[in-house]
Length: 184
Image (cartoon, rainbow, N blue to C red; front, side, top):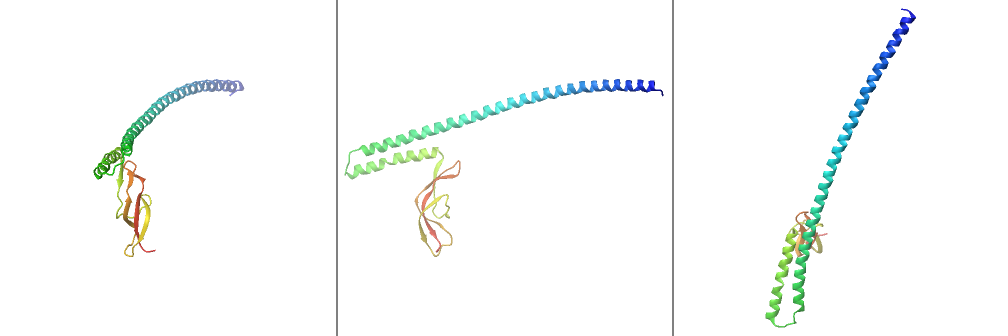
């Protein structure tokens, strides 16, 4: 093979390689455009889904706030009714008539029942502790009575009931109790 033939072959190879390079560059440019378009479409879908999720979250927050406001308003109205009844009892003329005193005492039952109703509407209820094992989350110890026959601390008497909220299962107020405990 002569030098001229070799030079012609090299020139042909170079032109062929250049054409292949141009074709590969064109394919790469097309693929890059497809990737960019796909990325933009994915970003649009993500943005739309995020916007929908954010709106749904805001709707839930708004509903929770509205529910809380309604529950608070109901509770406040009920408490104000009870306060009005108690104020009217306090404003009544003093009396030493036993019938009058008994009537006033029995009239306290209605506000008491209203308070119980309001608490029930808020999912608040009393719990009893008598005979249960001591639980510092539920019981406030007022007194300890040592009992040699006792092997573990338990509630011997309940001075005031405890209250808990059913929805959370958490105590709102611990019961004030007298404990029966083993000797020290």
